[in-house]
Length: 105
Image (cartoon, rainbow, N blue to C red; front, side, top):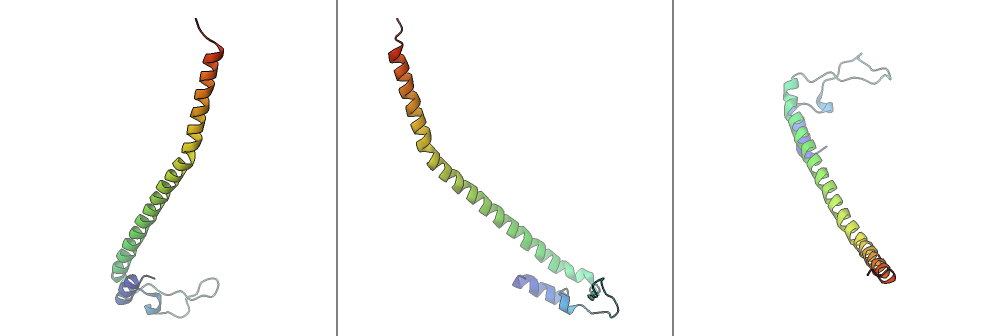
């Protein structure tokens, strides 16, 4: 967990280890379920911090994806350019050969 987020969650009592346990409440696997915090409103600080963290991470990921797309496009252009130039040169040669073999009056 992010240091700031953990600090905020700890201050508000939202961390799992800070939650009071009630005996006798178990899940199907026998695992104990912790009750909700006494004041769920305190968790809004941690929730807001988490939402900000997720938003920031999403923006960073989107930026990385965009940068990757740009670098791939540049690489593709560099690889494709000689092929296109060679093709255009070949088409020009074929056109010249056609004109020379079929002279028009």
